[in-house]
Image 1 (cartoon, rainbow, N blue to C red):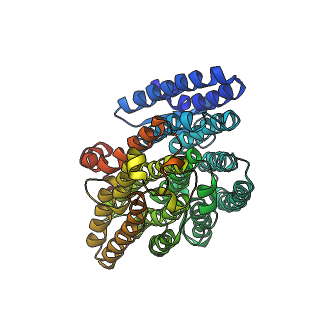
Image 2: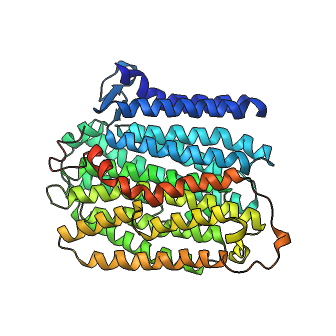
Image 3: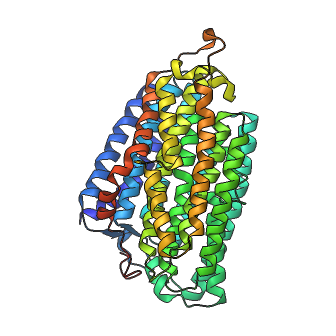
Length: 485
């Protein structure tokens, strides 16, 4: 009976906190926020403590009429991941918004709404509720992107909104086609009720297109760099680490349920090819950037490509399927921690320098050594050097490619790592150049650097726990889809 309370509370608690911090005065909002964060940590630990998958229906209405929440081990892993990212970002935001109380008041409720949307997406098990959570995450992210009120931020947020609305309409159309042909929305029931055919395949393609747009897969990525690069730093970290992961996790859920029924081989190869193009093109664009945050934003375009590579091998009944799924999960975690750390570290360096150009990093290695160290550790994971989570993800991709007999993908993984190293070392190089004017240095709260370093350490050394994580997750889908909870 524990899941009857815990699973809904994982969504309701951040919703309640969003309301409370919105109506509270500043002197009460800050301590209240940390009480809520402590409550979320306790709740997530309680969920993880239950070894078996947890399932509950809201309002006592069973599927197909009711909303079902499911916490399998993957969902629990993502809840812990979200908790760790939020712990670092909320700590960072306390220092970042210390001199901007108006922005702080705007940030807190939207950040908690986004947390609720992320948890709901990871736990939801019916198609319409996934649509609702996707929209809640998207609209909240648009509000966060426009937080500063600067003209460039507002323009980027508007472009983000238009992309989100287009994706929402495509997703809703695909949802309607599936519901019209099956009469159910539960993912488990849909997997059993859907029949191979043109209508079902068209519906799935619409869903995949919508989610690829939300995840900013090239060539549907044009909204991402200005939105992520132009937002205030704590928002950039949340957008890159979590928001695009929500849409990708939904896509992964749909793939696991529908791949055994529909012939998705061609679609999987197409997504992988688009991912490969994103890895190369996004890295080349990152190399051309003269602003640090835009370099990190275009790096996200490249790293998103790695998320889609495993779809080339994620086929039921193949030896590479389990390894490919392993790679997807590890890439979610590795990219999330590393990219959030990079944005947070970049924010420290830019605030200290007072400008956004790469030349402003000169002398940063001596002025802000912790931030530069965090940037370098996060870069280690993005490049894919051991013992990082990024290395574990890319190693799993390499294994999956070889098991599938598709060795050319190995060349792409090596090329992508070299390109990533090029733009990471380019930024680090500036940090070790002599500073032109020491008097220009601005004070930055040390808490901001420690927050970035926390996530960077998780990204750079998380690969040491990969075997334990894989064993706990039991990423073994030889019985796919019967093995799904």
